[in-house]
Image (cartoon, rainbow, N blue to C red; front, side, top):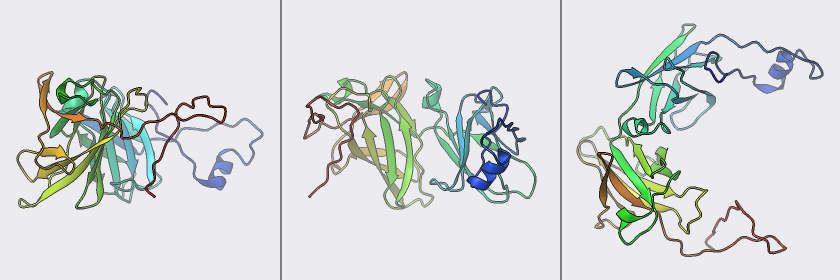
Length: 273
């Protein structure tokens, strides 16, 4: 339902599908949408957020998938879950909404289960603590061509867990909120990988950076393995962004069919022998 009036309806397994179809696939059937039992209310700075993408699973890092929906004009995404007694993890992504997507970022909350028949989850979107702009390689990094629709992936090294992701907008910008350690003497180190858009026609490849996040204070960043290197900073629309340069490939080539015609959208995986 594109208008958000009804939640996602799912049937699991052959028996459930067969029952829903009346035991036969050779006839017309009517599927009635079930009533909502979970509502996720999304706000940003107290304001209800429309068109945010909401998904629910059983684990913060991608367990059993339970469904996805977008918020409507009232800032609410609706779901039907088979059981409400177990805890759930709610993921909210406001990206793709212009400047708004740079002031609020992907937000994850784990919610305890309930013995009741319905559950309402209130989500206040996180603000970013890190902004960047992805550019193609250039002797002056800040003058590189903006890399639209690139993907940013973060991995927290000490805990060995995914640290979030973001896509760049039409002028290469992105925003993230890195989790900080609760211990004031500890820092988290994230490996940030910038991948070019699959639509790019430039000879560029991914690049990696190390992001050091303390319990409080400034976050620092440097190209992976180059602790003493400085990553440039630039101001765009009044916001400070680190300049993330994509990599320059060491090998380029063309994938061709047996008749030597070029093959588009191929995937090439290098393996160290």
